Image: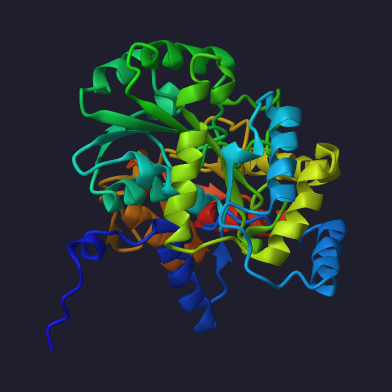
Length: 395
């Protein structure tokens, strides 16, 4: 029987991170001891006071359909969070609560992009941005950068990438997969370019804002001339260790927020009621309540950075945010190791999985074809073990 799936799904790539995680789980099920550095998921438990808020919500019988754009009390909490942490003024009517920040990103793209529009992706970028653009039948325009540019694009590169078809650009700082952070001055240089093109909108993905080891988070929408053209996206997964709770949100001009709510109303409706009630407690908590996680991530970052210096052929800056390294491993391209010829980053990542039994992710899906991504969101003991396995594998 011929399966007649849509071109939309046939042209959609599998997530690189989820595919590698699935392969790692398969090997683990076969009895192989895998150290998994492929997923960007904090290994901390959700803080007790947030869990208690969820239990209280269950006992208070929060079990009914929620408003499509989220409980008013939660949207008010998001407004307070934006004002406190980002210096941004968003009214509750400008906020939409979604089932994870990924849905918030997809909503924004879906309501702004038409078939044939162009959306700019400063590389490296999170794998799902490109897939979301493709689902909108728009055209991803990748601006490359690499380790020599510290994984940041320049204003000149942005200017050269813009065409009359450009409608959207995605920014992500702190960045997945590189951990780099754009400074206010670097963002201003990019904003100066965009100021000349009022038809271009900005999606600013700030999901890693609090996992920052120096300075304070900076929101693109805090530039007055960019506020009305920026959709600020965030969520609970990373900073609050709530990946499985599935809650994200966006702040945007009201006409965009209403469109996102309309879109969501026909796909998922409102986000989970219990998670929403717990999210009010999480967002109203002082940022300092979660600093212990950031402090531990910093210790792990420093540990992994030191260990990476002992592995020949790995070139990496020290990332000031998130919990990833994106080492350039192109030194190994063309070389033969353990009977395998390494032609690209995917070959190298598979070598580490199947020989060293360490799961990483090829940089190809992130727009960084010379790199692999390592997540250090796991224990120090496992990180030391993983780095030792990689080192031995590459001797």
